[in-house]
Amino acid sequence: MTLSGLTPHAGAAPAPAPIKDSSTAAFKADVLDASRDAPVLVDFWAPWCGPCRQLTPALEKVVKEKAGKVRLVKINIDENQALAGQMGIQSIPAVFAFAGGRPVDGFMGALPESEVRRFIDRVIAGAPPAAAGDGIEAQLAEALAAAQEALAAGDLTRAAQVFGLVLQHAPDNAPALIGMANVYLGAGDPEHAAEALDLVPEDQRKGEAYLGALSAVRLLAEAAELSATEELESRIAADPDDLQARFDLALALNAEGRRGEAAEQLVALMRRDRAWNEDGARRKLLEFFEAWGPKDPATQKGRRQLSAVLFA
Image 1 (spheres, rainbow, N blue to C red):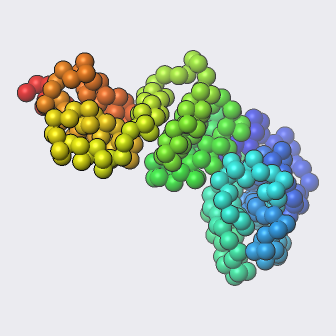
Image 2 (cartoon, one colour):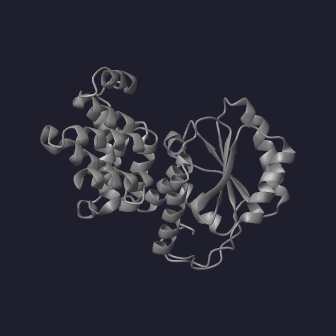
Image 3 (tube, rainbow, N blue to C red):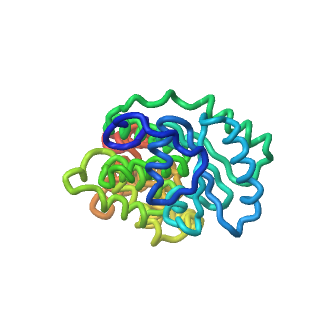
């Protein structure tokens, strides 16, 4: 995967400088495109950062030693705040390694020269061969797969970085927008998740992934208006027939990621009163299943529990 542009390089070009300053506008050319040919380290720094002044000389020294096997791009976060935010930079110095058009490794904080050398050697050893000009569609597909893998592993920072790279090339890419929405959902931020879904083109607002993310946004928004789980649990302990409290507790538990418990509360509600609130418990449980996806263990177990109630 390179995400380097819509067309392969047309021909040979002068060897690029091993070390250079860059910016948000030049990020694609200086980092994404360049990393097709050799790994690129991106050093996010600021003039006021003391540790940055310790790290950058070590980076420059080792990069020069590698004689073109790796390059260094320095980005002042004071002058490129949007890019720093998109990359999830929370403290500096922060160094990201790119190879094949995507982030492959990184670290934060100043490291001694020996550790910098080990880091760079690892990046060089793990870099893919120089790209042969794959089509942009193949590159996007590979990047999306890497981002989804990171999301599934719970690595929200890396998932956001790779989805963000895809969106730099294709701002209306529906899978990337939906993926970014899921990153926000994983971080408990339904407002920004909804904003990402609003950018999905109208004709692509369908399918399991989009509808699931949309349901998850709605469920989190509903839960934000509810009492804390402890208070709701106390109400149920005092009155097991407080069905509204059970319903609200299910929403709150789901918002906390306690999916199995959320489903159990709705199933328990249905056992007490199937017709409550115009079959509201069953309808909400189906919303949960849509938001969680059919392969989620909580969905599979919840469907079995629902069937046991419906066909008892």
